[in-house]
Image (cartoon, rainbow, N blue to C red; front, side, top):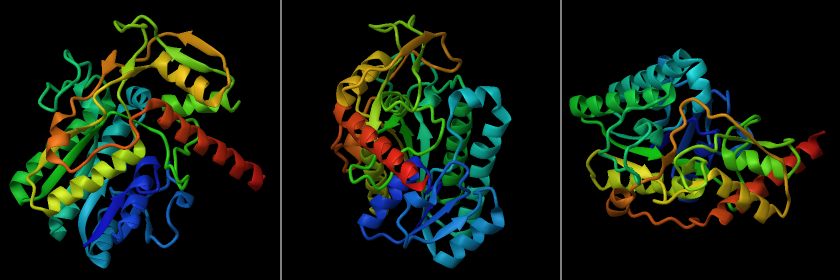
Length: 331
């Protein structure tokens, strides 16, 4: 009954590992540490250093640990980077997922939870966006994830693999117990960037476009607390264990906040001001992206606990302050 968490030393993956350990689940982490960190993980969790694209390593890990379920987070996730270097994203996100699925099917793994993204919807015509909405992604990142979803559906039909695809909206915040959080240098997550600016780690924050068709001209996103997202994965695992059919679910709160609203929240929570610079739009950014959450709420036993934007920001800010303390102590 052991669970393999790929990318488990990363931002979202490490929250999932703590969630599973808290629940008494046996866990193994596979991560190449390109963007992850060992210090984010509980020390007792077995760790395998390597890539999901390493077929022999994945097969060995599944066999040695008796893996019955895979929760797959490992991926490249920065939309602008995917526009600059699309083949790297198809290689890491799509081809490596294909290798992982192949190894899982060959080993008899029957349950798979896939970390997908709202980027598969592109620039949706209607928001909140439903899971059955068209999926014309506008970035190679979104395309790479959609291709993986298609492979998973085909593998499910052909080999009896049951799965839950979770399409994340904007994941934010940090573990309320401050065991893990977003730790990657140069991260592009808006709330983390704004918290860094509030703490003086960045000289300013850039706003990419104020001419979108939204109330204040800036992009609107559905920000979901990372701990609520981890609990959604636990609920998906329980659903599959009960014999639930394969499904695709949005992970969000069903409402959005604009870039300016997020910046205001960070200034309010931190009680600090910081420079904001307006610049041009970025390629691949839809104007507004919020989730229709009716399906996840009716399918899974999941109710979020941290829906308030200021709460999300306060947890992210506390983690950012803790990172500063750790770096100072290590200097």
